[in-house]
Image (cartoon, rainbow, N blue to C red; front, side, top):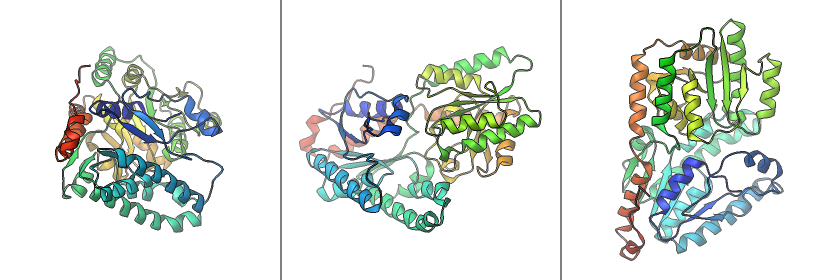
Length: 406
């Protein structure tokens, strides 16, 4: 089972349509990876149309643990990547991963054209991830890990002939390197016009008297997403007499524990609703129309594409005050919170649910987020590819501009 998110799959396919052949090297989850395979089997994955999958060896080998096993596995994966790289005309690398960074550096040595896509500062994600505080060994190793990821990220960006970044912070950090560095909006699989029209229809119809306000979470159910504290914040608000319910759109390893916690907190099934993974854009549009606010209270986060989706529909957002989020989104429509404080999360939810209507600040945020959707990231990528391959005459016949209406 190849775990490709629908948005990423469409993005790769649109780029792949320009080439005679495209190989995607990625991790494959096999049935023998019992728990992980069961979790992912219920999540929508993208089926490639224009690219072939080359699985990386031992992607999730649960029998090999420890530093030596991890380094051996990384070496074997990099060796597979290098074998493919020698045959390729161009490499398109997604960061942040160790194998991605090492592949970019190796491709530079091989003299291959390289484009690197970076959606968030790798060291910032590591630094803010609370999992590194769970024991003394992790706390001692975190500075070394942060320094290593910083070095590898910078090395990979230097090795690239062109770079695609999301967010002004990354543009500022790497825009002075040789070759183009282009900022694009996050890659999404989302029908903005459908969601916006349904939200407007919902607002025009008004809400029934006494109907609870709806808080929406959309994403994986994992510890780093801090949903355990979100449940406590919702329970706290309800104990204070606020009529609020929580919709959880997603699945993951923490789902069973969250269900037990919701029951222990006295959150009835109509107060905390588990919807499972939502892949259909029309279903997502319905959720954004139904909700009164979106919450993202993560301890660590990459580029938050879900925030762009919500703001573009006019939905206020409750979000952790993390550098990776604050640097990349319009702040006017967001209630910032401390993800480590239940009181802070509860206060942020209350602020978002009771924003004035109409709210000029939220309208400004909606305008900015909507403008990002007018740019098609795959077209930007193809222009950069054309620029790089234009310096390699032998590769030019293999590049053809696709018909975007097909």
